[in-house]
Length: 266
Image (cartoon, rainbow, N blue to C red):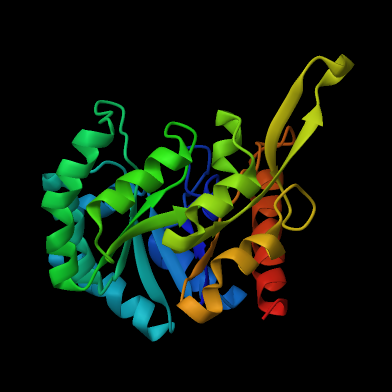
């Protein structure tokens, strides 16, 4: 089990709003400097265009920094998962996170099971685990049923209980349902705040330990130390009215706070 950081913790610093978006090597160095030991390249489309030499350089950079790499994408079409299995091989990755749905493909449970039964054996043969993330587009029970139906130890759940609140699922229920099948954990805290005039709520991220995430309960249910599950820091940091510099500075502070909190919890 190790603690790490996702590209989602650098959301604004790699976005088009950044005067000079951070590169992957820069994110790797920052992760190592902050004390992380894993870096999850998650929903980072440029990685798909890297040639073998560039992938080898990235793998060497991670190794020099003492970092383990993980990958993240969306979708379960076998050809797409096959491309990410190739990337995993080039980068020395043994965990790939995905999601059941994409913008143009929303398989039901029956189709999802059939597609995964085609793709997952190749992952198993390569020693790579595929994790499907909990999120609001798919009921957690439905996601777990897909994993159970495929019935392969190289397929599991990436647990992120905050995502499913938008589906009106209680985080504690998401944790309870997914815990036995969890292969990776996204750690981000979240909270509701009243809008001006008390007209509704905003649901957004907050510093770890200040919101609704029952971190201790999640860890007790999933037992990451015992089961070797990596915990990956993410954020839902809203854009700050003061502009990019203030947003980037706060994003760094949240990341540092999160990884420090996790390291102290060991």
